[in-house]
Image (cartoon, rainbow over all chains, first blue to last red; front, top):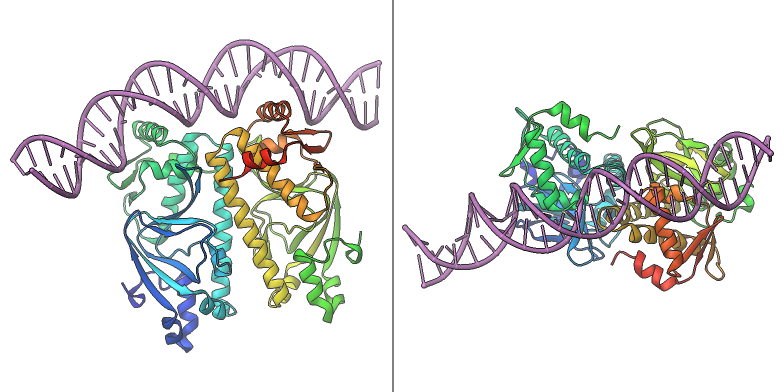
Length: 231
Length: 231
DNA sequence: CGTGTATTTGAACACGTTCAATGGAGGTGG
DNA sequence: CCACCTCCATTGAACGTGTTCAAATACACG
């Protein structure tokens, strides 16, 4: 897939980057490369240095921190068009690892080229928005992890992700392609996969929502939202 | 206390702001005011709009999100010189509430004046550093809340705060002025004050550290660090 | 001295974990 | 084509960490 046909071209980080480069689109293209990766492949490693700024073009990925030997905390899920952690625009080291959840395509921009453009208005606001969003979601997740029960944590995550999906695509009848496995949900909200399974069963039995075969079906949107919202 | 004698003048956000204003220090002073508040006073309210950017000059404060009716998640503790959430440099609404932990003094800068300076080099890197730090600490806290036991959560918080205190002041013999009450620790690491009390007793009995009367005494620094570090 | 707030301790409880076993879907090689 | 393997979802039972409720102590302040 090339940028010319990219559905994310019109908004977000890439959009600002390319639109600002109308003067000289080739200079940007020279400092840009694609990368393809399979589901489960590691895309970035915490503390590792890189001269590139990464954007997810296609597929799903997630950012995480490894803790201890067998555990990890998922910090955020990345959807097409999403910038990998915004701090990497001016920091060489990754603050978190990243892994492909499905097969993915990534855009890698030279950081120097990005920074050169970063004085332009459109890119500046794109960066600001990325920070705002990142800060907002990690604050919310902190509140959820620190103060909420398993049910509410999981409901929050589902609600949060479907909200983001709805903003991108037109969704019909509350069914979403949803590649998270139960262990990913568990790693994101600080529970075990076993308990996530039980809560999902509960949700299914209550007619709230059901997750199977990579598809999330929301049966009772208003109730899920009530359960998953912070206040 | 005036900025001229401020010990934080030389580093951090205020430092960059004032040093960049050598050309015209008065223009900045005109868009700046002090605010004094007592312990327990609310300094900012989530979702509320403000035209000011806040910096803590003196005392301790914390940022938090109210959840439900009686609970709150503390997102971060603020020490003298700290910028209140960095996103407020370009966002009018507060993403989190803030409260004074001790009596405090705050500097309030007009956002427009800050943004006008934000193209200067020193301020830009100061803002970048604020974001880097904020992102780093909230990622770490997420991992701690999601993956660690009560003991490790509390050890992490103590370790994290003493590290920051050490960076600011010269500390003798591992004793720190430490105004957090047990409920603040509880609200920060997602436990109840009752359980925080038990864990602190355990730490005391083990000769790890002891917290009493607003003073934290670290008895076994290396063991506390081992327990409180992520990997 | 009385009131209010923070700390401390105990006992019962509950939510979520751990361990273990089963079943199903997809992939591979004989 | 079937046997075998692996990975994931599912379920049960026992366990444990942290919560909840309640009461006692300590301390500051008017």
